[in-house]
Length: 619
Image 1 (tube, rainbow, N blue to C red):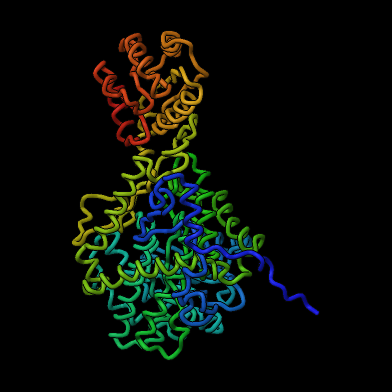
Image 2 (cartoon, helix red, strand yellow):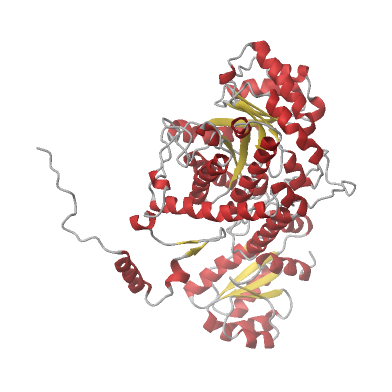
């Protein structure tokens, strides 16, 4: 007879209040809300723990994979996604050669970036030579004005090859609104092509032709809930326009594909894709499609460029790997891993190979493609899914009240919102409220740029932005989060690299901690830093600094000891180098009265302080 005894029945389950009481004891009087509650940038708070009772009012845990509202994914039996790599087409024959090569290296989805002037029957035939479009996913991105022509060429090509229409999977990423957002260009006349493109491809149920490129918002610094809310409004704008033009609701919905970004917030990004499917299904349902499958959201996810760096660029691999994990576990249709060297060069063969293998590791070795929605039932992830959905829905409703996404873009409210967030995040990075590993926190002290320079943005005509590119609407201004620090460090490197000497004295623990803090602080600008084990007197330390030809002398000690050491050291140095105190001691005003004006501590704006030091040093 089977043993039906439940484990731990002899123990009484603690209540939530009992857990909170225990936490209060462990905090020893510290404020629970300030110490343990995470105030996210997404508009909601995250608690330090969740219990089953927190999910009692949620419907998402009861959902099933492959069923409306698809919060748990579009598939029932697997979580397999397409491993995609994009190819910029300069020469169709070379692009085809590259495509055939990477198809033998794990890729099963191709994205061709094709200039509008190159759209032709001959180009398509050359690009797709020896590629089986009923096995490999094929995606095209080109000028919106040439997308209809491309659609008609592709239909003729597919029919000429005799492909089974059900087996042809891919996209024409027609998204004129993206041009308005990112370039301020007035492309409203191009919007009338949408229904014609849909009509041209309607016989191919798995080939989508309307794109929502919210990854552009991600790469401009948008918070997760902003990307999600605006993506939904963006998609609804296209859906409404198609239906208003007479396109069947089912056909219109299954013509739309979402290109979404992936930021570094691991669990929240995982939850974002679940919330996105949930909300999009609810939106499409309002158009009364005949088949619930029309309510499925198809997402191509791309790892972010926003947090990538020029310095310590191999850290980009760590960023993109966790981002790829989020998307894979969140249940996406296809994924692009951005190569780690994109910020400063055209990706090399090596970086592209690593980017492919990052996905293959997850898919083939970690078996992420075998388990449907592994986050389901997790109290934390279910909470994040619900919270993101609620906050994103507020943004969606606000946009609808403004007349829809197109009207909001014309008014500039979307652009203002994203640009404001980007500016705030740059400000937070300058103060190290937002960490960029290897750039504003724990930089590589000895690394040099070695000629690497951030790539300049390009305008719609694929040339560097020029003043003559006038635009009637506001534009989003994407700038990588690390760009300000990189510009400062490159300028220092090209002009003159100063030497900063740590004058460590007094309390052992404090002087070591402050020396490490100071080295990290000053190395963010590329300064050469010299740490020390400690000196018996300030005179000994200053002499050693001058012998090392130091431009900056940083005294590192405890707050109490600064009253004893700082002024004598400052006077003995006698202006022969810049003098800096590491910390914000209680005696700071006394030190300032003695003529000491430079202090570095956790509340400093690191970027502005380093710019100020460069100016004082004549750099």
